[in-house]
Image (cartoon, rainbow, N blue to C red):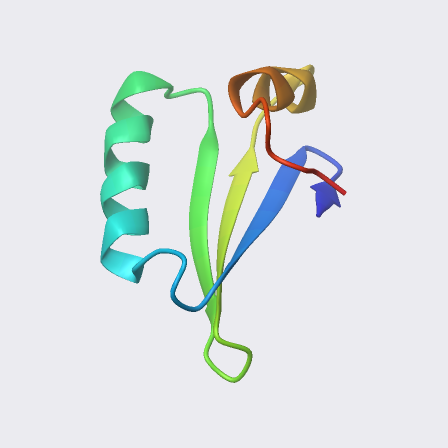
Length: 72
């Protein structure tokens, strides 16, 4: 899902564990401190959301870094 200042990526149950997502966020924060990162859960839907936000030009940067991921 496209946001004004980034994206919200949705991962359905079984695709990735919440612990794995949290570990990825921890490492990514060290690598790319210009990202705003957040993890959201929707227990009733079985979804883990990864919110990646930032300043001007961040959506283009995210698209380049996540080449092959369908956004939209």
